[in-house]
Length: 96
Image 1 (cartoon, rainbow, N blue to C red):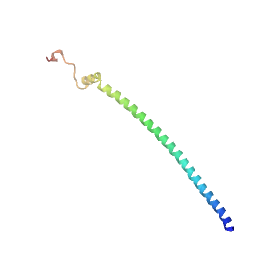
Image 2 (tube, rainbow, N blue to C red):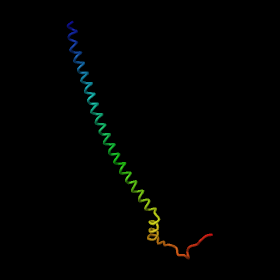
Image 3 (spheres, rainbow, N blue to C red):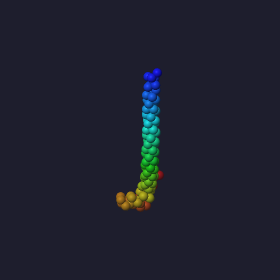
Image 4 (tube, helix red, strand yellow):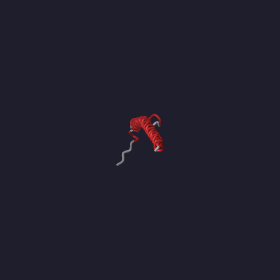
């Protein structure tokens, strides 16, 4: 009987230690999950900003390409840089 009474407090202490460790692991897990969620949210925000910058750059490049392909721009460039000019009426040949 005395041996049984001696074991009960030891079992209770073991139970408390296991309970404490489980709570500790649960708390650490909770903090880690919240930290990772915050970190992932920050990374997502950064990626959204990067996407917005890339889309704006793409829009500007499309505008520049449209300008560079425009007949008015090409005509001006041909006259200034290449020295080309409109043909005189004598130089125009009409094919049947």
